[in-house]
Length: 92
Image (cartoon, rainbow, N blue to C red; front, top):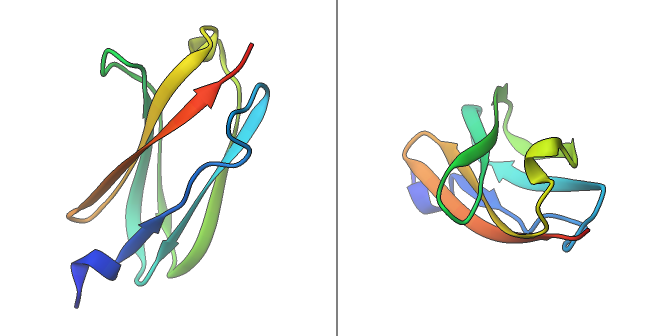
């Protein structure tokens, strides 16, 4: 199978956000998935793991105390050998 097509990670929406945002992704096969958020220093401030079926999924999060600072954060989706990171903006 073509690993580059195994997972697609989309831009979070809304972005920028102040209260809640959603992370969309698609899997071409069922997989264990890890979604993590890190700050600009590279420190992981939030993480969620789950097993997801093939298809489109969204993980929604409320703004948590770890995101008390506004600014840029990174979110990373890992599944199998696939890892992709995108940027998001948190507003006050």
